[in-house]
Length: 404
Image (cartoon, rainbow, N blue to C red; front, side):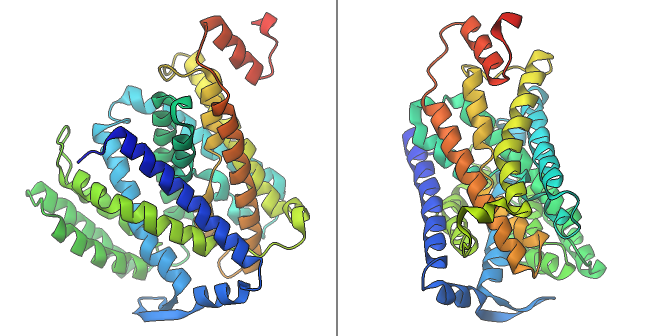
């Protein structure tokens, strides 16, 4: 079931490039005579009336109907890595957890500092908090041998953990009204799905049928529907060391559909912002706060946390990775794209002007992080000596080598 490593790298590269292409096409269309057609298509009401929302637009179907499948994949990856992968032991979890927490806190702090407590903007504090794992892994795949496996593993672990953080943020801070009855039904169904696993149900069809019902209940509850994907994923059985567990089988089956279908479609539907004012649009408080949070906040929070954790003896540095490569990976974590676009829509519901401003900041910050991180990793050689590597860490922090 596992793909050949070269095939896997090719898929990751293709998925990352497809996402970039989808966003680029949307941006071009939104700034062309086709903008009205693009906008009207996304706002077209289709399908049956849904609980609480009524008949949904194409954009809502993508965000509330397809993105839960993306979050289902995220949940499956989190559970697999936690029980049988890069996060399987406390020692393996420690460094990415420390890095991810700092990588969420510092961008949020920078965002709030830039917007200056403006009550109209403070709700967007979480926009620069999450890393787009598909985009970042796509960039790493383009780097090939210039990014050692330990760097990819570290970046994936950090992205997975801050995806969990993003899910918690969505559930706790971007839920306006609750239907207690529907929420109770969703929790009861989740418990029943978990019980199926305990009683040895290993066929995927009962879990998938339950997932659809769980999605409807969560949608009706007022909690964002994407949470249904994570809850469902946590109930799918996984035995430690089992090669063909139901969880790994489901992950393998939906991964190409999500990475080559759901994610680029969401990118196409969300990245189409009509740019006015050129580069001057980036100087407004909201886009500037988002861009600086992603580009500066992520690298500052993650790299500083890793360096301090290693120096304090709390965790070990990834094997075979030099400090400049770790710094490059920290910069790549500033690619917020998919998750940032998603949270931006939740932060300013019904305020299209603010959503568009947030998109400008997301695109600028993510692009700067992608290009800078790529260049750092591309032109970083292998470690020559420990002394050279320690001097390199001092250089990144702006310290004088002689003082060390």
